[in-house]
Length: 73
Image (cartoon, rainbow, N blue to C red):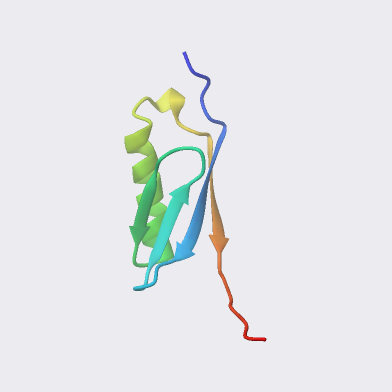
């Protein structure tokens, strides 16, 4: 039996058309929502769907917020 993941990290970025997209690192989970509160709920739901057995679910889910800024030189 595979050892459960202790911590799962999602990279969160603003979507081009508004809202947010969250992509997990190391596991194929992607979800999106219109605001951060809804995104948190969507991430939890996606993790529960991906890890159907509760004992296999990560104990910690980290949302890493990424914001790119482009500067002209």
